[in-house]
Amino acid sequence: MKQVNFIVRENVPIAADTWKLVLEGDCSAISGSGQFVQLSIPGVFLRRPFSVSDVQDGLLTIVYKVVGKGTRYMTALKEGDSVDTITGLGKGFHPQKTGRKALLIGGSVGTAPLLLLARELLAAGKEVEVALGFNTATLVFYKEEFEKLGLKVHLATVDGTAGLKGVVTEAIAPARGYDYYYCCGSKIMMKAVAAYLDTPGEFSMEERMGCGTGICYGCSIQTNNGPARVCADGPVFAKEDMIW
Amino acid sequence: MVRDISTSVCGIKFRNPIIPASGTFGFGLEMADSMDLNLLGGISLKGTTAEPRYGNPTPRIAECEGGMLNSVGLQNPGIDRLTGEIVPSLRKVYGGVVIANISGFSEQEYALCCEKAAACEGIDMIELNISCPNVHGGGLAFGTDPRCAARVTAAARKAAGHKKLCVKLSPNVTDIVEIARACEAEGADALTLINTLLGMRINIATRKPVLANTTGGFSGRAIFPVALRMVWQVAHACSVPVIGCGGVGTAEDVIEMMMAGASAVQVGSENLRDPFCCPRIAAELPAVMERLGIEKLTEIIGTV
Image 1 (cartoon, chains in turn blue, purple):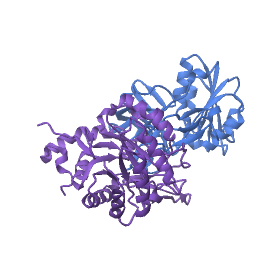
Image 2 (cartoon, chains in turn cyan, brown; image 1 turned 135 degrees about the vertical axis):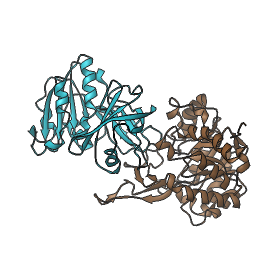
Image 3 (tube, chains in turn green, red; image 1 turned 90 degrees about the vertical axis):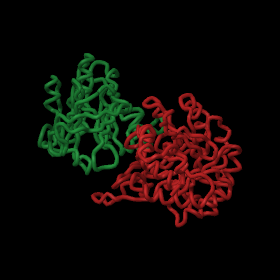
Image 4 (tube, chains in turn cyan, blue; image 1 turned 30 degrees about the vertical axis):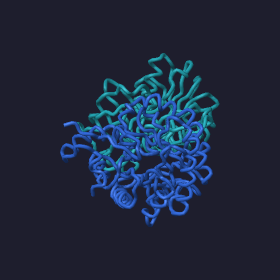
């Protein structure tokens, strides 16, 4: 955990209500994919947690969906602005758990942390396939980014305006040969994935947070290992630990 | 000139007046890898009950202008793990004042926890939480009636033996002085005030309360004037020392709280926004004192 003043390099919409924020600064506290950062946003009391979407060459990328006051204020950030950030938070994905091939499953803005994970898996010599689910075509992002890494991407939208018509399990169905999966999305989507797949895997959970640093116990969930703080004991939990 | 930022509360020495408030700094150990805990005058540990508790369902956190609400509901591993594992581990890395915050659902539970805390060598002071707004039939129920507050204080005083006993008061009362006097009469060595104010938010899109528990404790910068007023009232009405708490976020706030009558100051929600705020506030104190012509922090206590 480290407090860093990042400098905004880019803050642009990449899909409907979905923005990409690129920050420059000390990324050394971030140990891998699935971790998150807490941004201080002028005008709101608590920091806002965002998963690390990518880290490359001293640039930290996050993807955020505009859902409330805090994220609305974030859209006003301009190149050169300073953002007080706590980085390197939480316990992330475990790429080493993949034997030969991984399936990455993203639901809506939950797709964001899977990009860095894909890079890590590829660097470790694993094969990767991607299944993404969105509500509608205008919300889709990162499909090309995954394809640029040479990955096969299965896409589903609820209204059928892009890819297969249906929820994310439609996108999962054609994927083949994976021995482990990584999933990030809404709780209802992840619960459906857990029920749909017998393969072992892990989930990145979301919960309303207070501190994000493990000291307030505001985001605790019940797991098969007892109460766990999503921010500090997670956000990534093994499938077998989850109580849906 | 070297500015003296040390203080003391009922005979217990603090290297500086800054104490992370109970519930906003876990059990201290959570931050041990990220900061030097010894920069903190004291640590008030998360509220502990006789048995382990998960607490309330999520969402447990809501936000508002200038502050936040929580309904964590006393999640804790129970008094036996606190005294047997957590405090001994904390003691290996922390030499300041360790304050065990004790909560309960009956006088017997408070007494049992105080007895166990009193037997734990690493604990310097017991803070009796009779003001938690987030559990039914416990906490706040004891802190809003002077007779109940007196009874639970008397039971805790007896169980706490030689350990210093501080009672943490609720602002959700008509007359906090009456409660404070009742606790003082039954042997409280000090008083901490205030705990959170009972509050609520509604999500107007879903037409449902934001918190799963419907109501929660309101804290943060916005409550500072309420806390300051109550510290001032109680400090002038009681002879035991007061630990000020509520909305503190800067070194200036600490000075103001002490002028109102606080001997030491707890920092709460600000830790959630900035986990490094307590050492920062302590480090900023000497410069603020210099600007205001204060040589020794204790000289300003209750001067207003």
